Length: 137
Image 1: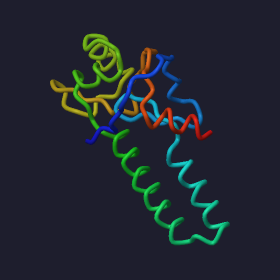
Image 2: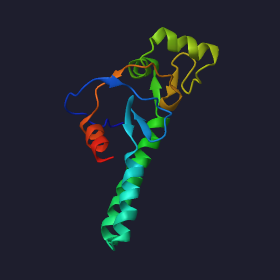
Image 3: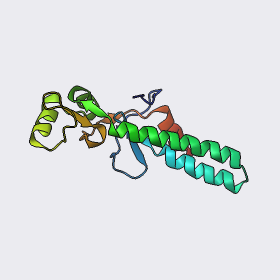
Image 4: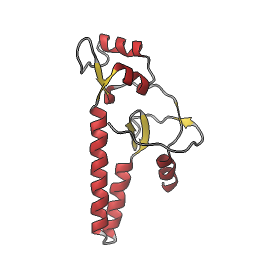
């Protein structure tokens, strides 16, 4: 699974809640709703009669949305899930054993879906894309 690249270092802020409207979690990083922004931009372009440009942006939005959906359904090893969630491997193994996290792997080799991961609050350095989108808002 690909990873959205982040660039640059900016002021450290608190990681937004992944369930907040307008945010998307990709590989443990919270991003603004780029799909929604692109769809809005496509509507604006259509209003100006730029249908070809709007079609291109809508195709990009659909492709990103499909990638996000695929990333959320990815079955991760407990070790990878620990790195992404901020929880220890032992805490995640306990959550699987107690049924708090569904095991989508084998009994002796558990895996969990990215979308099911609990997330610990942590500091976050906004990516270049986050900073550009924040200024555009």
